[in-house]
Image (cartoon, rainbow, N blue to C red; front, side):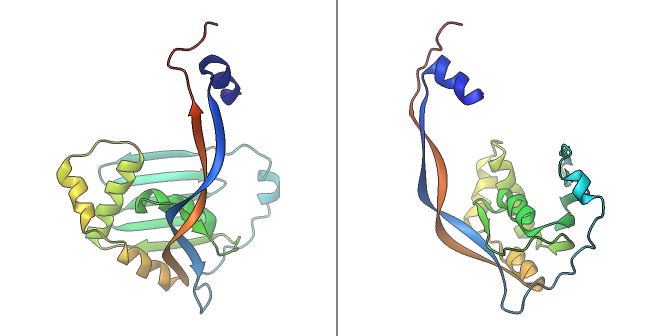
Amino acid sequence: MLQHLLEERFQVKLHREKKEFPVYTLEVAKGGLKMRENAPDPEAAKADNAPVNISGSGSAQGISVDLGRGSSYSFADNRFEAKKLNVDMLARSLQNYVGRPILDMTKDDGFYDFTLTFTPEDFLAMRIRAAQSAGISLPAEATRLLDTATIDSLIESLRKFGLTLESRRAPIDMLVVDHIERMPTEN
Protein backbone atom coordinates (compact mmCIF):
# COMPACT_ATOMS: atom_id res chain seq x y z
CA MET A 1 0.00 0.00 0.00
CA LEU A 2 2.83 2.41 0.87
CA GLN A 3 4.72 1.48 -2.28
CA HIS A 4 1.60 2.22 -4.38
CA LEU A 5 1.19 5.60 -2.64
CA LEU A 6 4.83 6.52 -3.35
CA GLU A 7 4.50 5.44 -6.98
CA GLU A 8 1.35 7.53 -7.39
CA ARG A 9 2.36 10.70 -5.52
CA PHE A 10 6.10 10.87 -6.32
CA GLN A 11 6.23 8.82 -9.56
CA VAL A 12 8.71 6.50 -7.86
CA LYS A 13 10.20 3.84 -10.09
CA LEU A 14 11.90 0.96 -8.26
CA HIS A 15 13.49 -2.35 -9.04
CA ARG A 16 15.16 -5.09 -7.03
CA GLU A 17 18.61 -6.44 -7.73
CA LYS A 18 21.32 -8.38 -5.98
CA LYS A 19 24.64 -6.71 -5.17
CA GLU A 20 27.76 -8.15 -3.58
CA PHE A 21 28.45 -6.80 -0.09
CA PRO A 22 30.70 -7.73 2.82
CA VAL A 23 28.72 -9.95 5.18
CA TYR A 24 29.31 -12.33 8.03
CA THR A 25 28.11 -15.90 7.79
CA LEU A 26 27.02 -17.68 10.95
CA GLU A 27 27.63 -21.43 10.67
CA VAL A 28 27.77 -24.48 12.89
CA ALA A 29 31.38 -25.33 13.81
CA LYS A 30 32.87 -28.76 13.11
CA GLY A 31 32.09 -30.11 16.58
CA GLY A 32 28.40 -29.15 16.28
CA LEU A 33 26.26 -26.87 18.40
CA LYS A 34 27.15 -26.81 22.08
CA MET A 35 23.90 -25.30 23.28
CA ARG A 36 21.05 -27.12 24.92
CA GLU A 37 17.79 -26.58 23.04
CA ASN A 38 14.84 -25.29 25.07
CA ALA A 39 12.04 -27.78 25.64
CA PRO A 40 9.22 -27.46 23.08
CA ASP A 41 6.48 -25.06 24.13
CA PRO A 42 3.05 -26.77 23.94
CA GLU A 43 1.42 -23.35 23.48
CA ALA A 44 3.69 -22.44 20.53
CA ALA A 45 1.33 -23.79 17.85
CA LYS A 46 -1.47 -21.54 19.13
CA ALA A 47 0.87 -18.54 19.27
CA ASP A 48 2.13 -18.96 15.68
CA ASN A 49 -0.96 -17.24 14.28
CA ALA A 50 -1.26 -14.64 17.04
CA PRO A 51 0.15 -11.14 16.52
CA VAL A 52 3.63 -10.53 17.92
CA ASN A 53 4.25 -7.53 20.12
CA ILE A 54 7.91 -6.40 19.94
CA SER A 55 9.17 -3.79 22.37
CA GLY A 56 12.45 -2.41 23.57
CA SER A 57 13.93 -0.09 26.13
CA GLY A 58 17.35 1.35 26.64
CA SER A 59 19.62 3.63 28.56
CA ALA A 60 23.29 4.57 28.59
CA GLN A 61 24.02 1.19 30.23
CA GLY A 62 22.41 -0.96 27.51
CA ILE A 63 19.19 -2.18 25.95
CA SER A 64 16.54 -4.84 26.44
CA VAL A 65 14.43 -6.13 23.56
CA ASP A 66 11.30 -8.28 23.91
CA LEU A 67 10.77 -10.12 20.61
CA GLY A 68 7.46 -11.64 21.71
CA ARG A 69 6.45 -15.25 22.43
CA GLY A 70 8.96 -15.45 25.29
CA SER A 71 11.97 -14.47 23.14
CA SER A 72 14.12 -11.60 24.37
CA TYR A 73 17.64 -10.33 24.68
CA SER A 74 19.58 -7.72 26.58
CA PHE A 75 22.79 -6.05 25.49
CA ALA A 76 24.51 -4.55 28.54
CA ASP A 77 27.47 -5.01 30.88
CA ASN A 78 29.71 -6.49 28.14
CA ARG A 79 27.15 -9.27 27.51
CA PHE A 80 24.43 -10.32 25.09
CA GLU A 81 21.97 -12.39 27.16
CA ALA A 82 19.38 -14.28 25.13
CA LYS A 83 16.23 -16.08 26.19
CA LYS A 84 14.44 -18.39 23.78
CA LEU A 85 16.27 -17.16 20.65
CA ASN A 86 16.85 -19.23 17.55
CA VAL A 87 20.02 -18.82 15.49
CA ASP A 88 18.26 -16.74 12.83
CA MET A 89 17.01 -14.31 15.49
CA LEU A 90 20.53 -14.15 16.90
CA ALA A 91 21.98 -13.30 13.48
CA ARG A 92 19.38 -10.60 12.81
CA SER A 93 19.87 -9.12 16.29
CA LEU A 94 23.67 -9.05 16.15
CA GLN A 95 23.98 -7.51 12.69
CA ASN A 96 23.25 -4.03 14.07
CA TYR A 97 26.22 -4.40 16.43
CA VAL A 98 28.77 -5.61 13.88
CA GLY A 99 28.05 -3.14 11.09
CA ARG A 100 27.12 -5.57 8.33
CA PRO A 101 24.52 -8.25 7.56
CA ILE A 102 24.86 -11.65 9.20
CA LEU A 103 23.56 -14.57 7.15
CA ASP A 104 22.34 -17.58 9.13
CA MET A 105 23.76 -20.62 7.34
CA THR A 106 23.08 -23.10 10.18
CA LYS A 107 19.68 -24.45 9.09
CA ASP A 108 18.96 -24.85 12.81
CA ASP A 109 15.49 -23.93 14.07
CA GLY A 110 15.83 -24.70 17.78
CA PHE A 111 15.39 -22.10 20.51
CA TYR A 112 18.12 -21.51 23.08
CA ASP A 113 19.05 -19.53 26.20
CA PHE A 114 22.68 -18.35 26.19
CA THR A 115 25.02 -15.50 27.11
CA LEU A 116 27.75 -14.10 24.86
CA THR A 117 30.50 -12.12 26.61
CA PHE A 118 32.68 -9.38 25.12
CA THR A 119 35.77 -7.42 26.04
CA PRO A 120 34.99 -3.85 27.11
CA GLU A 121 36.67 -2.58 23.91
CA ASP A 122 34.58 -4.79 21.62
CA PHE A 123 31.42 -3.97 23.59
CA LEU A 124 32.07 -0.24 23.14
CA ALA A 125 32.69 -0.68 19.40
CA MET A 126 29.49 -2.73 19.06
CA ARG A 127 27.52 0.02 20.83
CA ILE A 128 28.98 2.63 18.45
CA ARG A 129 28.02 0.52 15.41
CA ALA A 130 24.49 0.08 16.80
CA ALA A 131 24.17 3.85 17.20
CA GLN A 132 25.33 4.33 13.61
CA SER A 133 22.83 1.69 12.41
CA ALA A 134 20.09 3.64 14.18
CA GLY A 135 21.12 6.84 12.37
CA ILE A 136 22.53 8.60 15.42
CA SER A 137 25.19 11.24 14.69
CA LEU A 138 28.27 10.60 16.76
CA PRO A 139 31.34 12.75 17.44
CA ALA A 140 34.42 12.03 15.35
CA GLU A 141 36.36 10.63 18.33
CA ALA A 142 33.70 7.94 18.78
CA THR A 143 33.76 6.83 15.16
CA ARG A 144 37.59 6.91 15.14
CA LEU A 145 37.50 4.13 17.73
CA LEU A 146 36.10 1.85 15.01
CA ASP A 147 39.33 2.19 12.99
CA THR A 148 41.05 -0.29 15.30
CA ALA A 149 37.99 -2.10 16.70
CA THR A 150 37.47 -5.83 16.31
CA ILE A 151 34.74 -8.33 17.06
CA ASP A 152 37.22 -10.95 18.24
CA SER A 153 35.52 -11.51 21.58
CA LEU A 154 32.17 -12.01 19.81
CA ILE A 155 33.76 -14.59 17.50
CA GLU A 156 35.36 -16.37 20.48
CA SER A 157 32.12 -16.30 22.49
CA LEU A 158 30.16 -17.79 19.57
CA ARG A 159 32.83 -20.49 19.15
CA LYS A 160 32.18 -21.67 22.73
CA PHE A 161 28.60 -22.48 21.64
CA GLY A 162 29.68 -24.29 18.48
CA LEU A 163 29.12 -21.42 16.05
CA THR A 164 31.53 -19.69 13.68
CA LEU A 165 31.26 -16.14 12.33
CA GLU A 166 33.23 -15.59 9.14
CA SER A 167 33.74 -12.54 6.96
CA ARG A 168 32.75 -13.07 3.32
CA ARG A 169 31.15 -11.35 0.35
CA ALA A 170 27.65 -12.40 -0.68
CA PRO A 171 24.80 -11.13 -2.85
CA ILE A 172 22.20 -9.14 -0.91
CA ASP A 173 18.77 -8.14 -2.25
CA MET A 174 18.62 -4.38 -2.73
CA LEU A 175 15.74 -2.04 -3.55
CA VAL A 176 17.03 0.46 -6.12
CA VAL A 177 15.26 3.79 -6.74
CA ASP A 178 15.41 4.52 -10.48
CA HIS A 179 13.37 7.72 -10.42
CA ILE A 180 11.56 9.97 -7.95
CA GLU A 181 9.98 13.40 -8.29
CA ARG A 182 10.83 16.03 -5.71
CA MET A 183 7.34 17.47 -5.55
CA PRO A 184 4.37 15.15 -4.95
CA THR A 185 1.32 15.27 -7.19
CA GLU A 186 -1.83 16.85 -5.82
CA ASN A 187 -4.34 14.70 -3.91
